[in-house]
Image (cartoon, rainbow, N blue to C red; front, side):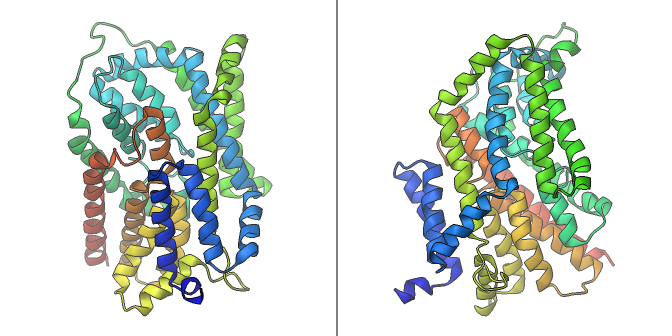
Length: 435
């Protein structure tokens, strides 16, 4: 028994991760699979009931339970866009703007990707589905397009919490950070087009002679804009009241969603009643269990294993890799990659790996080392995150288009490798050329 409890942390995390996948493949829902092995991993740390109590208390943190509320409100929001007919009007207007299905079906998730919200693919998936009016695009391909183009800005777009955290931990000026990371978006769009979008054979030209209708265009985007505006305003206003960054974003988003609901359902009670049917759907509650599972698993990685809280599974993995004689460059690559794969969110791998990486490169590194380490660490973590089976955007997109868990991987692996290779080349050039 002691041998099992004392095995290396990377084995505990790795086997728990494989256990999640095995349980899911055997028929248990992904949410329950993650919850099950979150408990297993927690008990495996040796913290017993204290570890489970830590997870329970973490769930009571506002940024965690508000995340559950935001996800549920987002599900209702997207359902409302459909039930009120706003979705169809907006798609009709966008067909005139984008001209072709190929541009429309990729442009929609890319536009929604400017909105930094948990499970934001819930916004774009219905739009992508509506854009494929004749159902000529394979569901797996639509899943891949929605998932990939939803994330093409997340390498530098300043509204994402992971970017804010990256700037904080790297110590780089914001403008410089955006500048060094922007080429990754170009690589992402290029890779997405070459390896995913070109597979869309139907490039139908829409409404050649029809003029652009701004009113129809705004039908769905005005409520969405309100959510974005309130989220942005909240990120500036709420911190002045003592709220943290993540909590401010969530509070702003909830405010925007409430205003959006009022706008959509004003004088349209029947649409409101129809939208409430969402709560009768099995998929709705499976989604909530899934989000809860992700929160529990992420928390298991952060459970304090000593009195001062400096030792966690993540820090133990770092020490184990170094003790094994693994080169520091490989350690710097593995820690964010593993963090990204097991958390499935950018702020998860940034928060878990950036402090460790910058501790490894020394207390006073040269600017070229800082810039190279920033890009290299971020892209390795992002590679793990974008391929993570527990990435909530991938999961909700799979559920929306009713595709299997791993079906989209054959489309997204090559663009993901393209971005990873680009990031490694960029980091190398930054290290060699910047003085």
